[in-house]
Image (cartoon, rainbow, N blue to C red; front, side, top):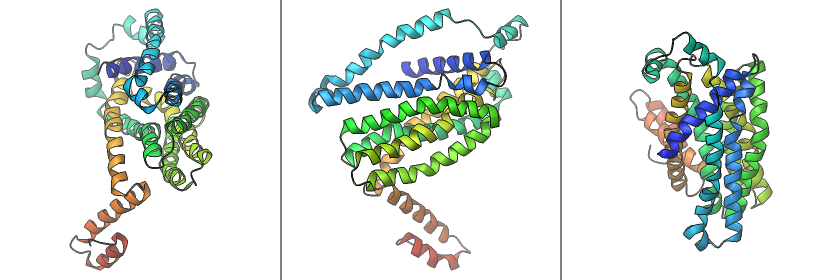
Length: 315
């Protein structure tokens, strides 16, 4: 809970500073720079855990090794404190204060004036959160438990994707300055969604080739996902005015993240169990069941035969 409170304030503040200090026509690029913190953090975390997994036995890692990464990260707290204590208000918000136009309760003002934008932002954030948790979290367990790949190799694949992501996040942030945030986000969302199917097919049918598995993570997660996460910060900032922007972007990002981060691994694990270890088969089974239910509706009797063929049973 404390970590969530800290992240909720720090992410929004970092993005806000980058966006409002950015020169005209470069806000997408500048706002994407704090987003690189996600990939750097993921890279460092994966690298440290991979190193610990390589040097320690499973018993040692589970007993005390996993705590080492948390102790090492404590040094970053002091870096964050230094930045926070020495940063100034942005010119845009300073102008609001000078006019005495600050809102007394930003959260209430945000709810009253921007209900539609809140829902739009939460929906966009959910796309990002689902994909990140599938490839950044769930894929590690899938590779180690289903594909039987070593934990170190799985973590190296995620770490490689994070390194590549550091380059492509600002690239797509800059691209959003030229062709628009929504256009980049829209096509990025479609590409990431469709890339998940061939990626997991390659993980399962790649002939146990470590390089193939790594590519199946790096391409969708390191490159295509950046098309979503890169322009996202500026996209959220433009949903709200300066009075409630800090509150708005933090709320949209973190509140929607609760559902994306909390529910996605559970759903993925349930689908994996249903399909006997094959996600593609699980999706087909669920789609078939949904088709069968539709075929039972009155007036669709002519489609029931088709439903039996598609579902294979239960129609």
